[in-house]
Length: 337
Image (cartoon, rainbow, N blue to C red; front, side, top):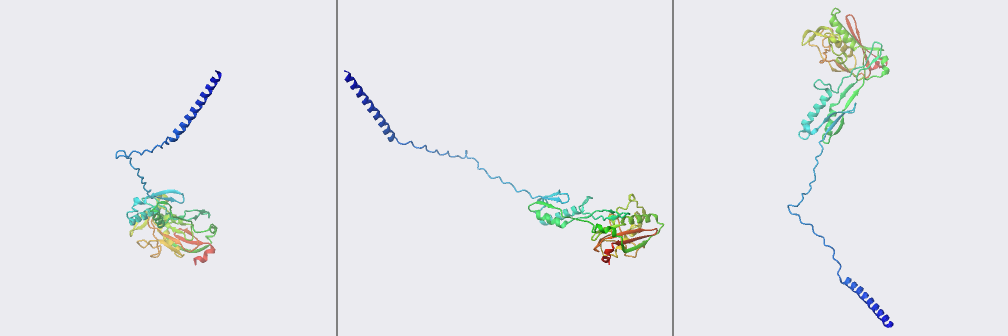
């Protein structure tokens, strides 16, 4: 009986093993026969209708900046003016634009409406009664034509430009100062009535104003600049003067005798006259045509020292005479011959 039981168990075991192998084989066959899964097809995006279309982004056009010209003062390095060429008609009428720029340069140099410009006449150095130097001011010139050229060059694209300013100091060396009275090279004397107190006082004051003035080589002398206003605050008194061929009373009458005496002295030197005017009537104290009338704020007597060496103006006021003497250092005497 036990043999049969053992045999039955063995048979069952063999049968189960065969079923498992068949099941595994069938699974492999099924796996081989089953086609590979197809990749998911990409879906086309939905077509946009007129109502769903998005506007195409447009490139924003940024306008070019408007050219601007900045004008700098080179002495202070500060911005003193800004020009916009387009606003002045640069792209519309170039000829009219140039006229505006020239007028701008002129006003900047010479001033406008009572406002001073950059141009300043030289205030010459002088010696005091002890021979000590009193400094004046240099000649300052704004070169108008050069400024116009610089503005025109920058008008298309803009930029920064500097004012073309010339600063000219007096043309002498400091070591010359002690020697400028060594030699007299010119002199002229005029006379006046000693009883005319007011007129004589005006001659005395104006003579003192030009006394011991140093005129360096290349320097410009201006009588009005050196003497200054002729008014009561400065001590000038009423006296006869000539206006429009008439003798009238005026503050400072008589100072033209000082300017005319000075003219006749420097006329013996190599100088170039910048401005000189005649009286409308004969004046008596100098020969006809040898005068130099002046009026503060108007007519002036101006000259430039073209001798190539400095000289000193000395004014000697006496009881009834005025002498203007020109002196220089002995080493320069040949320059003035």
